[in-house]
Amino acid sequence: QVQLVESGGGLVQAGGSLTLSCIASGSFFSGNTMGWYRQAPGKQRELVARIITDLSSVYADSVKGRFTISRDNAKNTVYLEMNSLKPEDTAVYYCNYWTTQASFWGQGTQVTVSS
Image 1 (cartoon, rainbow, N blue to C red):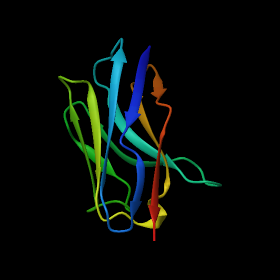
Image 2 (image 1 turned 30 degrees about the vertical axis):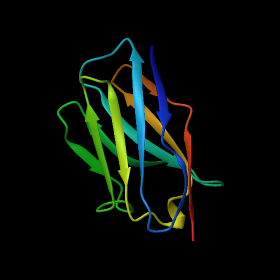
Image 3 (image 1 turned 30 degrees about the horizontal axis):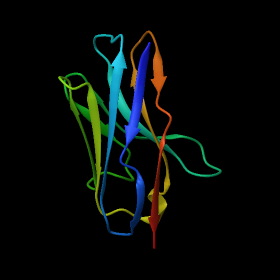
């Protein structure tokens, strides 16, 4: 089992910045991918960005150039630096830990961007 705890969400004005953190604990698997997903009201959960153990990353087109995902393997932590935030970035952001054997989710953290 892997437990994930997110932090860093909040209310910010359009154009502002936030950094989300997700700390993982428990029994880890090798070759894992950690990522951030988001779900806005009435919409499906969608990938924001993910990063695998070797630090290669993938971003949704909607956040490319504005968001940066990073991880500190020594601290079992993944970060999402969000810049130039837009009202459409408003959502609950979820941390995910994925391997070929299992997938785990955090409880989510709310990000609200006011116009």
